[in-house]
Length: 480
Image (tube, one colour):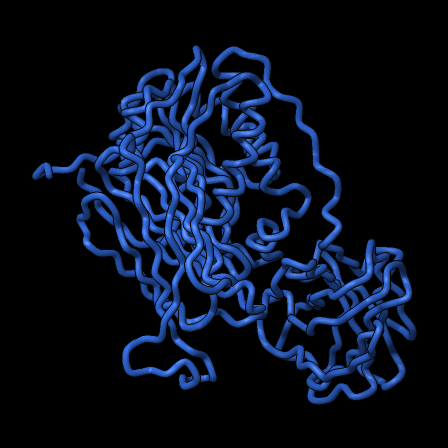
């Protein structure tokens, strides 16, 4: 066995025009965080859109990561520098104090003229994408700009923590108005203009059927009694309706739902010290429900009302009334959101499972690697092995079955597993919250053609149990 190991770097096929995209953060590093979505999620979405648009224009595209894995800054520059790429575009979102919004693009102060030109071509396209404040083209001594050997830029598309007038992170979560798609197109178009090739054609995808908003400015919003129009910052899409409680005023939001099924329902309002407690809300669907909410507080956000079944069409609605409102002088009626929960979807309010553990031995290993995963009885949905360039080299199946199963791997090898058995000293029937912690074993036998290097084990659990899926990663070293 060799005494040293090398990090695997995949040699990409390079055409005359090529670029590597670097979605920032990932894995254990979420980056900037908003109420609804994180930077690491948003920039990966944007990067996939950019990749598709660039490839449609004939550009060869690489990515430093294409999954939710942890990469150091050194990993990113090593991947880029070793691949022979012509350009490097690092994709980020910004954050400050939740009240700042805008777009800016950076290159290194000592960068080449091509770095400055690429930066200058991308920035106006990012401004086109969202129409936010133009914070300008700038220079900075960022690690990835300083240590890449090709012309490089770093874009900060928006401030994802912004909540002063809307939840910017929610726009990424739902891809509102093709939010991520427009930003991805902006990177692609700016690159193509810089490279002197015909840019792709922007095409907004069809409206997403699983997300519907009825605002108080829409015809699907109706009221009874005397309401006023408010214009303070924080109303959804600008304005909102408000009234002083008299016990006889109501508001109704009636969506045209594309299909029957379960929907997560949210209501948006601008909170305040003069808002009422015990505002009466009713949900009319397959089964009706009612509740009381307090609109006191500060700021504005989506408030989760619950999951409800609705028929397709306009038979269902959400209503608000002032007849029980107390301890305030104003009731707010603004917007309601329905998100369809398809067969594989998980409600945003669903709990997250506990963290689980991944063990690998031997590590470094020779010939094969046995992975032990304590999944707390949640059921492992997928075990995947990635190299440091985010290329998947093996998929080892799940723990939802029983006994041994063989799993065909992308590199042509066959993995053994899974086999589940109780942890020492814990019976299968006894554990906290009624769960049975078990250890699932997987055997990875790499193909002989796979080089020595650092690999990432990625395990996903919990989604099949109605929980938000939990992803854990672990580094392993393979020595031949």
